[in-house]
Length: 422
Ligand SMILES: Cc1ncc(COP(=O)(O)O)c(C=O)c1O
View 1 (tube, rainbow, N blue to C red):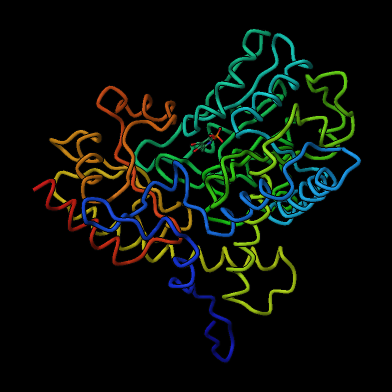
View 2: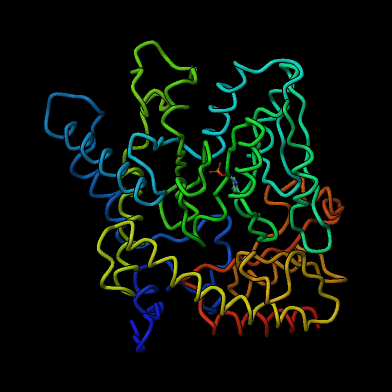
């Protein structure tokens, strides 16, 4: 931590960060492995790996039994729930664990659908991942009308006027992403929640893509639901749902008879992935530790997580500026999304490009041979690739930065890409 007279500057200790993630030390064809695939799933720190294997070694049991390992499991799950509550800014009984964001969203959409009828409307957006589209579209079978909010194609931002017009007295729910997993746009979700509430609709936020890049405060947003996936922010492959207590109590879940009616467990069916839940607690603790590393005065776990995100955002911003500037200088390259550095607070460091004469798959394959892990295609952001008419041409090449990436990696990526495209 560096301190000037008037302010505390939170800087990431990148050596410490990278030393936490064992997978970063790998090589591919003699090249250092460079993980630019965070939007598809991030790497995990050693402590997450340890928490998962320690749980399986010591405490592997089902819940609710009158013996030691089962009690340890109950306590471990309660601990992970309060860790996620600190991460999201809510209470532990508002945190629901599930296999992934998609399954949790289907669970909630089915329950909300029980109260909907013909003429009711749901507003979705063209920027969203299909996991925040198809579960709501499924309610068309109940006569619900889906309205799609438009985007501004030139910078892949939401058309907020169109969105506001489409939210009417008939709207029951607005489902929107916090950030786009394809082009990185960060939506003004606080404003969207306000618009929904003004019309008496609920707001469902997909924070899967935003979670590794920025702090989440569900109380400040006042959203009704917010879903994320821990494997996108340095944890194991699982999903987490925040629901306002009143909704988790009022809505009627589909569940087995023996399942409790108490929240949040009435939304968790069957036996959960306990070892991964142990990993979730460790992943929040990693972020808190990172926060304390940059700001030793962070007094609570939540304060430490917020300090971590402060440092993460500053670090990612620097890398993103270099990367976008370098990409824009490559002849024949088209970047989708916000490219003006003055507006970079409205985007994540997730960058979608196409290069004339090369398919995204060709580029991803060649980069992969040089140790760069990028993605090609639509990554389920199908609404957007169809809307921009790139679906038939292989979608985009997606380069996703995470806080463990370095300036040297960005420079090498740019040099390699320049070489590939000639
Ligand atoms: C923005 C966004 N929403 C939702 C999902 C689906 O998440 P899950 O795999 O946890 O179902 C993803 C996965 O890539 C995503 O990027």
